[in-house]
Every structure is written in C-alpha cells, then in structure tokens.
Length: 154
Image 1 (tube, rainbow, N blue to C red):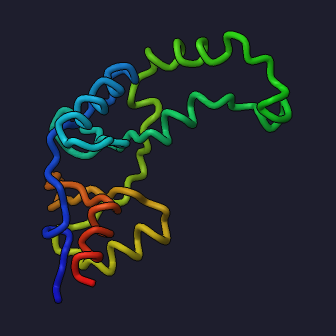
Image 2: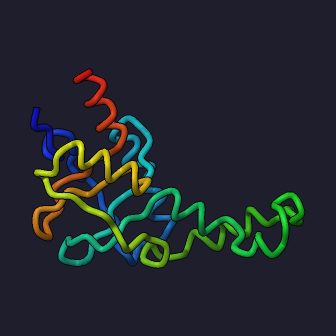
C-alpha cells in the first residue's frame, strides 16, 4: 500500500508573519482551533512571498514564558511567584513571532511515504511536518492524523 503525505496532509488555511506579535499568534491559534473543531498547537510562518520562514508552536511560546535562568535560581518552587506569571505574559504579548519561531523546520514532499513520515516524527520528536513542493506550501501532516490513518488500516 503506497500511502504518502498527499493522502494524510491537511490543507493550510492560516499562516503567521514574522512581524506578527505573539498576541496576534495566540488569536490565530484560537481562531484556527475553532475552525478546525480541535485545538491547534502550531502554525507556519511565511515571508512576504508566502515561502516557509519557520514555525511557531505552543512549545516555542511556553519555552519563552518559562524563566530562563531557573537552573541557576534553583527550583520553580524556590521563586517568588507573586506577579511573576503576569509580568512574563505581559512581556510575551508584544514579542514578534520571528523572535520565537523555530527556523530550522523539517519538511517533506507530497510523495513522502507514510513510513518515512512516522520515522521522522518519532526520531526527531516532531508533531507536524509541512508538505512542500519546491518552495510552495501544500499542507501539513500532523502526527495525530498519521496515527488515525494507521489505526484505520490496522
């Protein structure tokens, strides 16, 4: 059975710009979730020519919010928490997507076999893979969709 990215990918409805703020990105993530009927945890970032520039995920945002020097300070419970969360969120809202996005994005072609996709996702701990044909973005393969496709075939 020749199952490829083309059969399991979702089309891309929304992208972010590197100049968008994280507040804009959060709004887009929520809106995309409402449209999809399920939570959306990451979006592609495109340049002015609609070429892939990076990806912003919930992990990128949470990593930024987490106090960076926690290893030096000790444990989280050792910190004075009053106001810390609110200050970190306030600071995050105006940061640009381009400052937090992952730039080293692994992508696949529409003809990539599902076994290669599974291997890439598991080895690299990747939950979503953009599908590109040359520089044109065709869609996204999500690990949940790959899993559900495998379940159907079993």
